[in-house]
Length: 379
Image (cartoon, rainbow, N blue to C red; front, side, top):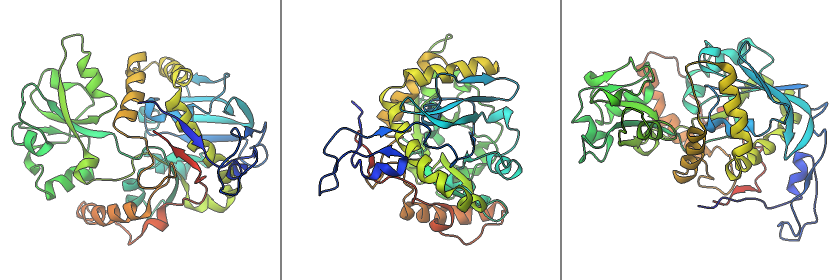
């Protein structure tokens, strides 16, 4: 599938500090896309824009790493990659720091955002935004992944007739998950899983190589890793949790709610750059994948990313429509109908876990006003 991204209205792109092209009466651009301006974010955004990710560097984060310039450098001591914030090759006048999550963070992203004022944006899924609204409210301004890549996997060769998670759950004794994810409780309530087969001690290992079970993972990662095991390929089958009704936006870029007005001028310029950078990464990922791989090498941990891992991640995000427009032509928006539907599903499940969940609606946790509606994913 060939990817292309279009900036349909050069007039609208003036919001991203671009030099406008001429525009026809229809609003469509009659000439080439506008040209980014040097130093557009200087004096408007923080001198260092800090993005806190939720995991080690990986293809799912490609859009933010796309905004790093050629001077990008990673530090094991800080667990961060820093460089000039560069949009379409043009220096935007500020620095960009992308912080790794996982063991480098040691705390939820939202907690880090409220304890460190330097963080501009963090990765906050819709379910987390609901869970933490009472004590740490956040507002999502860009949806990086339209579909959550999280899946539950099983050995397809051992269970050839298991076409769905419900089928597989009838044939395996254990379904391994990390912690106590709300989606697993939701699937129990829906009769897809049974409570007594859920094992919360999953450690992220490729256990299907030695055990007949099911476990959580990502469609963009584990199937490829299993297919390329040195000890012999495991041909996995899986179901996206999104397809089973748990339709949370998984990887939103969000800010603290109390920083909205302070950051508003910056967001008006930065958010459309984030939209376009994600599409630019999909269209031509090699340069950015090299930055991601170099960061992983510099961090020198158990987490690894090969050229094949990264290329596969991009391919699966395309093929599975992990990245896409959703039901509107605007790329990266958080559709309020979907968010409200999810709030309705998630609230009783989360309250069952003993969490204090406020009565909220989509408008409390998402804000699409900074998106450029003319940036779309053409697929």
